[in-house]
Image (cartoon, rainbow, N blue to C red; front, side, top):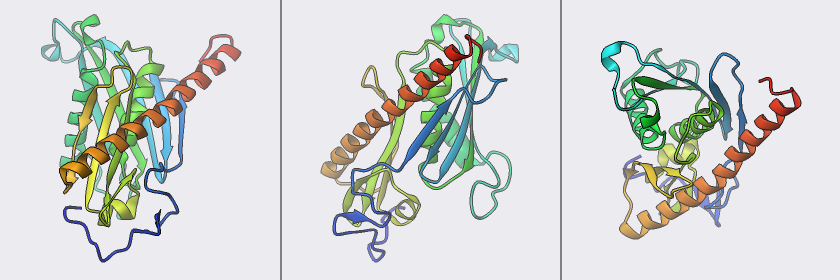
Length: 247
């Protein structure tokens, strides 16, 4: 990513190679309450990404030495299935998965009302079934819906989206080719209700003006994604209501 490759034409005449304009998201579909044995769950299709998120808890944290007497511990696990990419991935966590798990867990620690559940844990599992680009944003977005589906009290919903730079143009929601050959990638996680940025990372090079433009574009993308999250939870509520309150 760093530096990018200007010889590869990723945008021409104001249109990207997949036909989108610079500030356009890929197609996104979200469904809440897809797993019966989880306390909360969600499934997201975002471009070529397919991600399943499940939440368990709050429940007693084990082992006991991991308990915090003042708050719940948030345990996040992000994993890419071996079959999620073209070149089969070695099963199990790698450094990238561990890093993404850590930053997503820390982000949700600032959103979940952990002080209401001392000595407990809230476990958030995110499984990438198919990967195209932007899997951490898709996983975080799905995880937030799963937390809400589980009834976990939060300070607000988190939506995540990335902006970046391709051929010296700032764009929203990089696709696979743009992620591979672009000049910068800026994933952002936003607490919609408070306006707080709970996740911010950057790979590549942006000028200060480009950074401001990309950040603003990503935040606007997060607000659009929140509408899809809210719709998914509303459909889940209506489905339960039509089933007489049964999931």
